[in-house]
Image 1: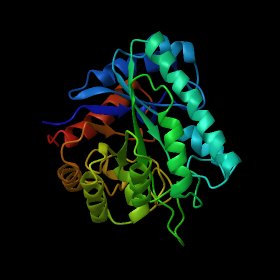
Image 2 (image 1 turned 180 degrees about the vertical axis):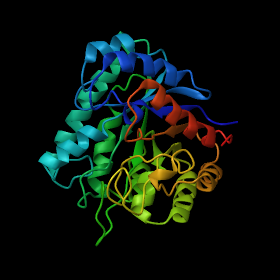
Image 3 (image 1 turned 30 degrees about the vertical axis):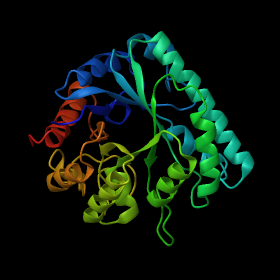
Length: 306
């Protein structure tokens, strides 16, 4: 039986970059009504919603949410390369933990003021290239001492920094993240994203092995399906974190994530609590129906119906 699936609403929605509350009001409940979908992944960009907090609180469906602060983190490290919970710069580390304190308060607001419930909160091991296990251990102790209103904390593994390879995120390695969780002895799990792993490893088959490593650690909570391309694609340059669809859902994407690798990933992950679909809209998608079609095609593959 397939684990409950969270769909990343902001990547597939045509209303995210160009705010359209009517389109979003049509799309969010329709995404949640798709077979197997238990809820949504939503972004935190320093506030509950990038465009309209009151609208979001009033309109988000009564489903489970995963909240990801990665858009905020990428903006923060762009302004300050020392920013992040694994930073060896104490000021940069403290700022990152303080921002997560604000996120915890917003999680409480979502639970109290909307129909939704935050089930998962994602952590990311910034900064780029210079993070270390010891400061991450200290950060995890401080973060888990906050009140997360019942949400499960997970480190979402992003592409690790690899010398002589242009990173998308360039955070800590999976082994370092596992070591930090164990050293901190805290209730934090792991979340893998197929596309971010292939950006790091540059080998689709190697992603299956990395998922198996995470599963073998006993820490793997979730696995999200998102693609990447080794060549120029309609989504831009090679090896960028553009959340490409599964190849069979949109062949023009040139995504390395095909049906066979989805099946291999699911087998390697085993019995995880959550699955995710994090697919970008097609370049010409403009309506809720377009977005639903894209999400549905990806879901069919993950549910074994593709």
